[in-house]
Length: 182
Picture (tube, rainbow, N blue to C red):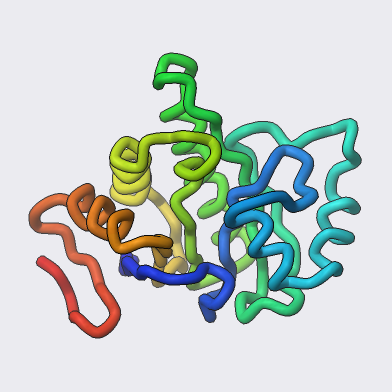
């Protein structure tokens, strides 16, 4: 499995699936969630409504899948990240579950490429340095047969630098236009 780091817009990634850092109602919102819903079109909202009635929110750490509709990605995997409460309320395990469950769905659907945003690091307040550590721990331990590429799509140059540092020395990462980093 190749891990690719990209600074960019997750809604423009031509992969089998992108991951949506969704709210528990799966009805769109701000940040990554809102951007994905806007880019995918109103069909995405209808598909999300069909998955979960409003009175049954999606639990933190779980994931569900819908078509990508107007996105370049064929599918959207929606996962609900944890809100940061200082790291004392199981946030790391719930964040790890977001990544593991998203990968599990990708494998179950025979997908080869998946792109993740930095889940929970926006309005949910998860410190990006800690989140990046969780991400690489999960990816190092992941059993994801058939997954050829995991693309980590970071919004800013600073976020990209944090993820590069978290990958650690000796990591094999691919940065578009720069080749492999050893």
